[in-house]
Every structure is written in structure tokens, then in C-alpha cells.
Image (cartoon, rainbow, N blue to C red):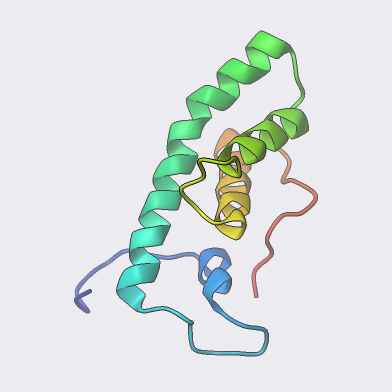
Length: 107
């Protein structure tokens, strides 16, 4: 990735690539940026699904977020579980819902 790239990767996402106490990510900047864009796109796309789930099933936000997490972690998952948890936390933020109890915190 060029230094001119203006993509902001939030600290909560970067934390997925940092071992406790480490300062250097375990993957390249290009890999992290690619995975971040995928996860951000997933969160954005899930806003419609989350709204529909809540309206159709009369579920509260925590139940909808859990269903989304279950779907992202299913047998056909395209992302790792820690990334799926980040996606669902981001979804909660986009929906202006309370964060899940297991929310990823900033380092």
C-alpha cells in the first residue's frame, strides 16, 4: 500500500493484529487494509439485514446482533471469529445500538 493511501483503520481493528504488549502488527499494512475494507463493507451491508430482522421478529438489538454474529461464524464463514466480532460491534455502532457485552475495546 502506498504511503499516500488515506484509509483510516480504527485502533479497534488494528488490535486484532497485535499480540498483547506488542507494538508491531502480525500482518502487513496491505493485508490489514484489505481485511478492514472487507469487514467494514460487511458491517455496512448488514445494516439492512439487522433492521429487517428486528422488524420481522420483534427481537431486541442484542438478539439481532447475536444472530448476525452466529451467521458470520457459521460453517461457511469468510472471516475469522475475531473479525466477525469486530463486524458486529461496528454494526451496533452504525445502527446506534448498545455495544455487545463482548465489545472489542481500544488498546
